Length: 612
Ligand SMILES: Nc1ncnc2c1ncn2[C@@H]1O[C@H](COP(=O)(O)OP(=O)(O)OP(=O)(O)O)[C@@H](O)[C@H]1O
Ligand SMILES: [Mg+2]
Image (cartoon, rainbow, N blue to C red; front, side, top):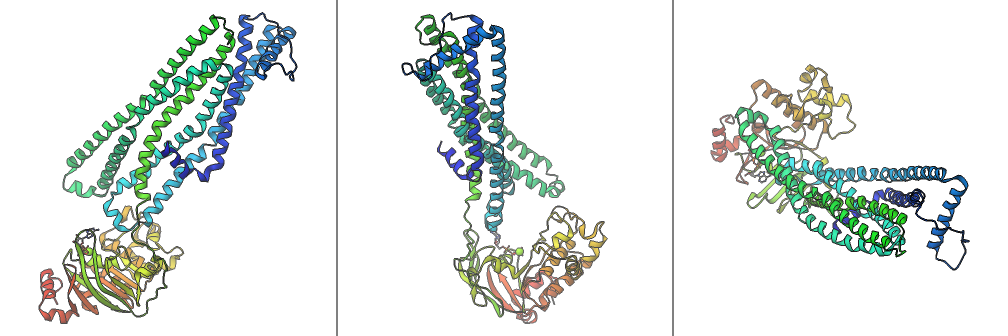
């Protein structure tokens, strides 16, 4: 119950208006239901001619008699009177017409009750999805090396749906059904409190039995949703790795793994669904049990002639009581759905409440780049082991600094530290003396261009991929950038030119073409500082030359930190830092370093390509 309140409190506020309207119309529905069925009493009395009592009208302000008895007496008098004037069959017709009319009203208000719940449902779901999306955008890269993409997708789709159902059930639980039940119950008490006591004794017993079954449901649902997340991750990986799977003929293995997970998910779903399916028959049985008891007890009261209740009123009582059964059933079902929703909410909250450890400075400083970038005794680790071990370097404005070193030595990591994709644990990185941690992330990253080791492209047109992050780029600017990046010609050769779609992650392009698109993007941004993680993938010489030219254009008159694999890049660099196991082991120009006959020379000889 506490969970329900928390969910409602979190997501309902923007939709209070609709909640109030739903409340109002459900209230009216219950009231109209009670009123519309009162006609049963006179109908039965006419049909069975059960009473030969003669009623006389008692004035409404008569003090001697209780209001309820007054209503009853005058009601009977009214129908007697109608029969006298119009005859029994016309009265029956009038009653039927009244029943139709009041039912029309009742169903109308019932519809409006649901009508106003719909915007709540869609609104809450929209809010949660947006929240997750924005959170994903704000979380640091480090968060996602822990999480599987498919699982995050599962949370955005499956879990949000569960919460949707659960929020709706909570509304049922807290607004609709209690109103209906309370009004019906009140009516029953008014008709006969003696009978109603039975119901009141039986209802909590019913609730307890239902509750015990519901208890383990949350835990089970949580496990099942996790399993579902794993399955989605597998699909995601399969989609991404289809080429490799086929090349290594690993279809069977991948398929077996998926089937196994699928089977387990099915088993869990079976158990949950069966448990949930119990709710309906169980409440039906308990409901009928209660009716049977009431029938027996009420019937005895009538047969005994105790005068507590007459037969026609008893049937009316049963009708109202029967109206309780449905909301009570819904109520019990809600308890189960809410449990599942709470489990999913926990999973969603894992993302929503994840801590962003790349924090914005409390008192941000203005940042400008006029003289240099410097790293002072920088230490960094992803997990347990230090990856960067006390790096010191200074990059003057306009310089090109190259980082070389073996695979895994930490080059890409160093490049990721400057735009604060990760925060360092010790030391400091400064731009013109301002610690980058004291600047706004937006200001810091705005001054940098970033060309990644793997070109990161979006399933969109050439134009939008190049203009990415630059909202009001014109076609002229994009074409200009593409020309400098040697991308213009092959873009024009495609069917729709700049409006051609490049496929998922640029799947319709060659490796070199992808690189040139991401270079064009950096050229368009025209950043002061360029971070360039050269692709290691071997390109054919023609493509290589085109990419090389593009890079040279890009680096021209800019401050560049380049992770270099190409000889020409290294030769032209102002300083080369040789990285080994997270440390700078040698620094200098190509010729100086090569002459040292140290680690750099070994590296050059090893890679063959780098030899002078
Ligand atoms: N997200 C990560 N989480 C944990 N460890 C990581 C992560 N990224 C890289 N590492 C580790 O950090 C070390 C340095 O990796 P880095 O990517 O900086 O190497 P690199 O010099 O760029 O290599 P390459 O030339 O192959 O690109 C490696 O040992 C790697 O295993
Ligand atoms: Mg790298």
